[in-house]
Length: 598
Image (cartoon, rainbow, N blue to C red; front, top):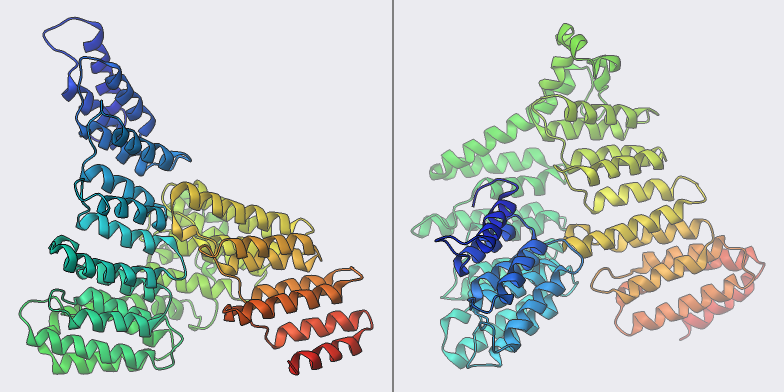
């Protein structure tokens, strides 16, 4: 249980000593189980598995299911390529062998968790369904169903919310059929469904689930439920999102005042989400006025709301004061390097003698303030803005200060380089993130580096973009991390890079990859237009005919239900240019008339 990195090896050493030398102590089941657990706790599944095999080879030992579960759990949490296979194979082994202990609920839950971590929802459901189909065997519990919801949540499938709603209905049917309350949906599961809709910015559906939740007698909505729906509205494209968030906030307060307990009392997350809806629409002052009114009418919220308002004001004031003291307005780019000479950045001795300059960076107490300042500078027209932002990032990494270099900070630097078409430098910052133990890149990090290559004009840019896409797919597969799951934007960048150089076959292969992986990302009309652009830029004699083929195929897909692929004005503009480029404008007009008359 210790934190020693070599705890597993030390325990294993004692085990080997007991096996080799006669003493009053013996290498029994308990000792083996401890060694296996030590390796498992240190995320060393290979070694845990090896000790398990040693124990199974001893004819005098009859192990329980516990050490098997430990090894399965280690494989479940492992990033190794074959970890999932090793985990599921171990379950299959104990299920099929009469010489081994029978699997228990922990065994099954571990495998379900393994699928859930990797977003493999269908396989996770298969395990649960197999348990339900064997009434005399181990039956699923609440944890198993929680993992199913997590699996769909992690899957990034476009229909994940609907699949999770289906699970809620199936659980209700199970309760009605078996009378077992363990299958009843609870607030955690409902909140996961709400969150699935919220992540996809489907605010209306998220709120519908909240209302369904509130109609039930056996489930109670909480501050998490309401805050998640508010987040869906805040991040949606709805113009009236602030008003929707205000309505939900006031409803929460009213419900909280009429019930015992504080399950619906707004907290800092609620207020931050509420203000986010206003600030993202440049209506910050209105949001602050609403909170003032809430505080005036609800004195019971004085402590939580006043604390939030103080932290909110301090975060904004840190950025405002810093900008004002440097002589730059909020919408201008503050030259951070005017505060300290770039030559002094990595010179500790000089830093001590120039406190008036370097200490100014330490005046920025808020990471949000720093991000605001760097973003403003990155968006400026200065040609060396990216290097300056990168210098500040390196300064934060190399010196003790109040600030943390997180993924957002790195992403600003990447996009600063991308804006200036400095692809190699943008990718080098991404590589710094990948090598770091403290921060992990996300989709935005990769898209920034890919944008840099796509706009660089370099003939090798498509290959660099495709390589980065392949890395994202590989990292998603190995880590089960949906934060790196390529979306349609990522695929479109790669297609655009090929299209810009007229590499049509490569661009079409990327589109085929998108169409073949709908659970990963669905192509849109933007994807089709990118391919149209590839034909326009190509030197192929049959480019107009190929663009016509693509149009007709796309229209057929759209008519079969893929509405997101329906051609738009840009589609026809690109086709027109393709026909005109080869002096076939009249043919395009005929095609257009033919389509209109269908």
